[in-house]
Length: 126
Image (cartoon, rainbow, N blue to C red):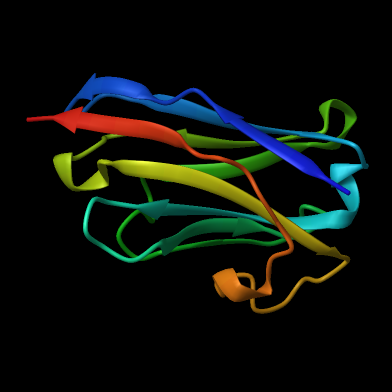
């Protein structure tokens, strides 16, 4: 069983940056594709970014492409999301998700993930 813990959220002004981290315990995160999702108040959870288990491919929602960057450090069992040029519309709770092992397709689909963190809130003020 993999336990995921997000951190790094907070309050930032528009144009600022934050770096979110997703740390895994219980199993080696290095065998899992990982996705970041977000959920704004009153809205459905949506895909933000993903990275394959081997780190060879990453994918981004159009709304964050060129501003957000996903990376992984398997030695630290961590996947990070660097968020730059933040906008008020980026305000949401951000979740990381993982699994099943070695899946490297359909990472935009939240229903395909086995494990979820509890989320970290991000608020971007205008």
